[in-house]
Amino acid sequence: MPKENVKLDLKEVNDMLVASLRFQGQHNEIAKHLDRLYKKVRSYINGKPLTLYHGGNAKDGYQMEVCFPVSQPVETEQIKSRTLEGGWMICTAHAGPYGSPGEEGSLSKSWENFYARIREQGIGLAEGPPREVYLKSRLEHGEDTEKYVTELQEYLLLPRWLARMARGLDHLAGEDIRRQVMAGSKQLTALSRPAENVRWVKGAMERLTAAVNEETQKEIMAGCAHIFPEARIQELRAQYQRLGDIDKLLELMGQDRSVGEHSFYSAPRRQGNIIYTTKIPFNPKGYEEAESEVVKRYHYCHCPLVKEAILEGEKISATFCYCGSGWFKRLWQGILEKPVKVEMLQSVLQGDDCCTFAIHLPRK
Image (cartoon, rainbow, N blue to C red):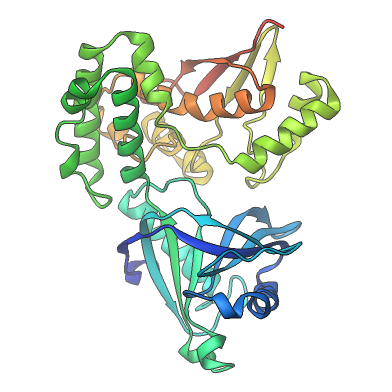
């Protein structure tokens, strides 16, 4: 199905108790792991099976988690139970066989077209593993793959981002200022036009600047950031404790290639007591092919809420970009288990050609 024919739906999904089994492998291994899980939890199944994707690549294998909603926890050496967070999702459906990766009409092609449509609409996605929910599968239709229906789901950014900003305002500035700054936010939806989001964010930043001091502004915005994956933080903390040396850890982070040819960690580098990190372009292909500096900056920007402002020449307070600082703050405080200060040095939203942050390490 071409991206132009992809139908996008909004859905609010409830939290659910799931029993799950994690593995690293390829997509064609999902069925056998679901079968293993089904045999152990069949008496407690309370919904449709699903797969969560936690990262990885075709060469080394993908980190996947097959799940069944259950009526009570099920625990074995390999099967774990937990509450899977719900929220607002953007969804589309794939009908028919799963096919082979890259094959026209395959499930992987549906994912590709789903993401292309999301980008085209300027819809922001939140952190959280993408989901495949098997609405009609082998459980109902055996090997009659033409009857299979799979729903593709991604968490939406805007509802989560607004909720985080509201919580930060309540905590750091109080209820009255929260009402003042968040005025008009209820009119925004996940499918609001990018220009509407830009207008609201610009006004909110102006109201925030007038209401609280600069340090409080930065702290509130840092709390709006995407949540850095906890599994990666735990892994890096363990590596740091094993290596006992910050520079060796930075070298290891720079070698990571889990985002195409780039490091997931933006290849951080240290000078004295400061670690500098420069984001890679959000859309590397668009960035390389851009014919103007403005379009380059647009394709570089990671924030779907405001990147339209770059094309429109709209100025938004630099305070907004401290949202991005929260991503690095969570990472480094998790590794070091000590507070760190994160400073924004460059931002494409402010006319720079990249986004650079400085992480100030504890003196010891």
